Image (cartoon, rainbow, N blue to C red):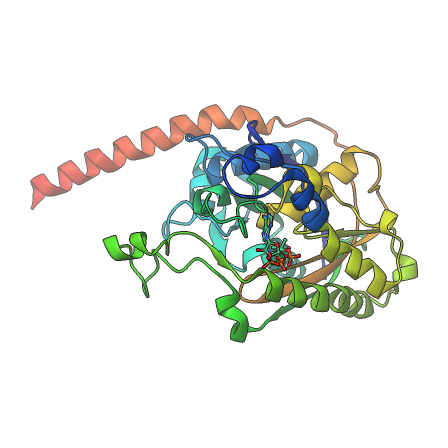
Length: 367
Ligand code: COA
């Protein structure tokens, strides 16, 4: 049975930064309050012309570059996102077109902030089953579009960004060692974006009632998160036949510093084993775990051969954890340049549209 190795990684955040002081000019809050209660100092916010696919394409091309894999060799693209570009088509299909992944199946996965763990597990299982060889998993968000900038309970927390992993099949042991996924829909109302779906399609009244903004019961979500983070970590480790002594790093979902601290206490692990960057990005939902992992690799913390647990939680309610042996980049004989595919992808996309137009015109003439 092949193993599923993480061989590429990339992240991208939009340039504009929104500090706590900036937010204090919008709502009744302060830098001190936000830092003390969440650990967040600033977050990045997408420009008007940036969307989840825009951020995802940048992160994905970096991940493919590290893996030295051409987009045309991808079999599968999964985009985990809580802020998809449309209800349909899937954001993953837009990414597929823009990077020129001509052979890949593509779909979005909705499991809120646990989405990246769910998606990586789905890709890893497809590789383990032998049905595919190369997968791209992305977490990408522009959640700032669904934030009510007058609601101090939520607007302090979220940021935009994207992270991506390339997973590849190999006969050498390692890569994704185990994963657990959980859900509890009885808590569905604790963190929701109610408007725009089929229960509350967008109308004047849904807009008036602010249903197009996210709603969160912060206290309940906090209690839930502190309960499940440690437990899911131990479950995943147990499944991999490991204990907390065997791992070098925990890469947790970056929602609130205090939630991570509580998990560390539960697991009796020091905070310096936890990768934390919530101070600079806020909660980027599905993107938070890959962004934290990429930074850890770039800082020389997460290294080839290290064992780590990724653990997350989110709306749904959902939660999950994954134990991995970090593979690192595989030495390449010849270099492919994934970014060069971008131009050809655009050209191909344009030509496909022209051909579709001509075919449509000719078939109408034949009728
Ligand atoms: N600035 C200043 N005061 C604020 C505030 C803000 N941004 N937000 C809330 N407050 C006030 C409240 O009104 C309340 O005042 P009161 O005591 O006079 O009623 C007080 O601060 C305490 O509010 P509380 O909600 O108990 O704060 P908290 O310590 O629970 O922190 C969160 C609030 C949202 C930071 C925290 O609950 C949290 O992080 N929850 C989890 C959220 C999360 O992770 N969501 C994403 C899941 S993927």
